[in-house]
Image (tube, rainbow, N blue to C red; front, top):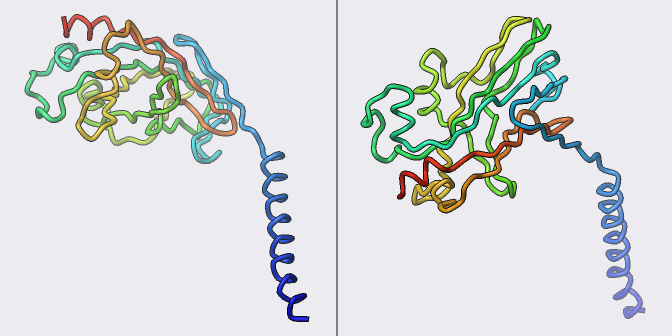
Length: 214
């Protein structure tokens, strides 16, 4: 009798385990697969209500476009935006990727675009880079770099420079520095995540960085 009871408990546990595993498999098989869409540089991306965190962002009527993408040395960046080379401390001086991003509002009177998470992603989707507050402040002197979203009047357009220093390692070596020898990089800019993950694909030339190292 004791021997019979010894096997009842494991059998019951096994049954429950099978049910749980079966449920997980069934849920994964029927889970919603969010759609991904990629747009080329220079094309207006219609947001159509797509968002990063919540539909309350209300992006209907808004469009986003990347009109230029450049890799710049620290020196070229400071020269471009008319700042002295010692404007930033030595630990903050990095080569950067600079995007000119345009926003268009067709007819939205209430919503806007969450810009804090317009992250830059490498082609392998293995690394993501946030806009740099320090560099954004230099490139957009009339814009608060801590602003999380942008709202513009219906029927108007606006542009901002988004700057990424691509630091991804504890030793401050940037992703750009790791790509030494390449002519260009394929990068993606996330402009929404749900329910459609929309991205802008671009080729970022590295010729300026080659000139720096030669």
